[in-house]
Length: 109
Ligand code: SF4
Ligand code: SF4
Image (cartoon, rainbow, N blue to C red):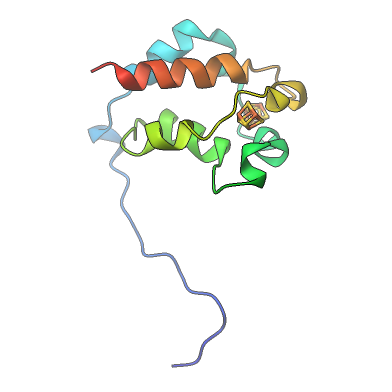
């Protein structure tokens, strides 16, 4: 087989109907500015933790929105809460509060 230096990701199905959005709705109540996020990725582009690890705040954000919470706790622990993302967000999302609330909500059943 010819190697092109990259490979396609294996396909996966996202069953939105099976996902549970309770925590996402709670997050909006705790941090109303979360609703303004447009997924631009500015936070991830400037993230301090991303420079030293595989941490991706945008990916965490998208998984949380989809109600896919399984792997998020470990990922969110990589955030240092430095607040750089807060400074660059064009929608003025309170990203630090968002991350702290996500961590707390993931601890609840
Ligand atoms: S920079 Fe702000 S609007 Fe853009 S993805 Fe991050 S939180 Fe959302
Ligand atoms: S607060 Fe967390 S997500 Fe935001 S820039 Fe710092 S390490 Fe990255």
